[in-house]
Image (cartoon, rainbow, N blue to C red; front, side, top):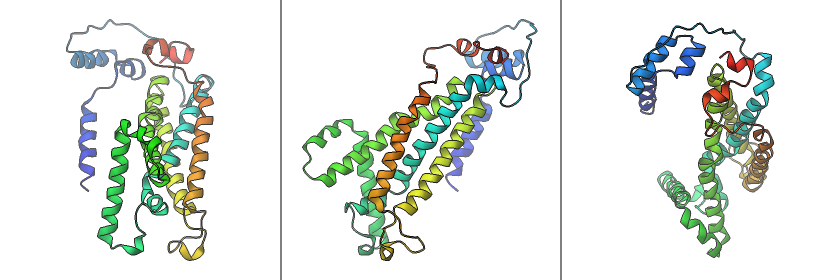
Amino acid sequence: MVGAIPAAMTYYSRSKMPETARYTALVAKDVKQAASDMSRVLQVQIETEKQEVETKEFSLFPKEFMKRHGLHLLGTTSTWFLLDIAFFSQNLFQKDIYSAIGWIPPAQTMNEIQEVFKIACAQTIIALCSAVPGYWFTVAFIDENRIGFVIMYSLTFFFANFGPNATTFIVPAEIFPARFRSTCHGISAASGKVGAIVGAFGFLYLSQSPDKDKTDAGYPPGTGVRNSLIVLGVVNFLVFSSLSWCLKLRESRLRKCRVKMKTTKLERSQ
């Protein structure tokens, strides 16, 4: 319940923010409102000229859009989907990984408070190690493979947030035309959440012990944590392989929106 408060505050703040001038003028076709919004944001007076702009209505995904941006949409959805499989499964099942490598005692040897404390300590250490890049250089001087594994494992969280996890929600917001931008971003995000569901449930079942007597109650035998991590490694390789789609994405850095939008008849009409 408490977690809903920040979300409600964010929703209220967003409702007070104006749409971009490009969307208001070219999609909503309200030039005066666009000028008014920009005057309020930039705190300068903007005058509008009455000008009739010929526009053409399109369905949700016309042929022109799919021809121009179909591969772009496939690239943003596939990479977000594959990334979230590994990203969420690692975050949700850290305690299982720590137990499998012997970094925390088995759950049977602790009471509930001790287990929560041990897991919290392990997660805190992982977070701190990921946030201090200078500590990574100590990997070369670590003698115990167990600690080395923990450090390497922590790196995945840092680089997931520093690199690919950021680009998954930044790129879709930049490369699509104004009329379809929110829709394509939403489709890409939904694809990522499907990947999160696949990762959460898939790892939950795969990480179960192959020995039926050692599995959690109600779960069939799985492949074990070790093999599950190998599967996640394969998924990460697929993410890397899907970069071939990303190579088809246009670099939007330092490009003006007008330049991005004017290359096709579809985009000019937006």
